Image (tube, rainbow, N blue to C red; front, side, top):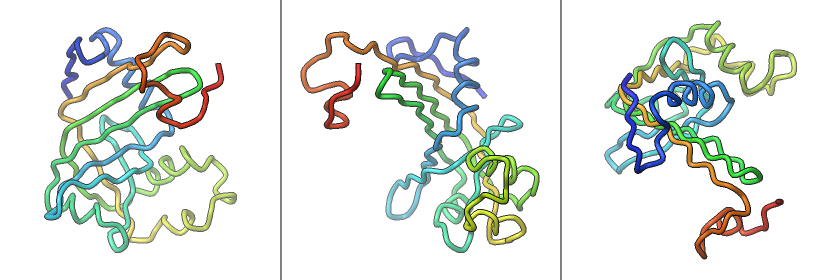
Length: 176
């Protein structure tokens, strides 16, 4: 995977990009999978697991539309953002690459679900306990070709142009 750095775009410097990339990918955030369809682009927010240089996610072949879109055209983009309005932290990782569907691997599925639901499977919502062994649930493996890693964090209290900032984005005052 090639990390693309453009200084004018808040991209992390090459020395920091790899560690920032790993930092963001270690967090239980949503990955936004962008796919193409006949009706135009589509975005699917998904739980993910970063493992073996790939992003892994789950999809229900019978109930979700993105697995069929990936099957038809595996070219995809993935965006992940770590944003904290209270601190001004904004970290963005964006990928372009190719995705394929694979059968379930119970160990990998468990690691993905434990990342978001915790290690005690007895406490999981019933919607997730039935995934293991259900062949309609498939793994999607996204293999990144290029990545951008951006630290777009900002200082709270710094003067901001009118009409920008977290107060505008959220419609409520930000604790300082």
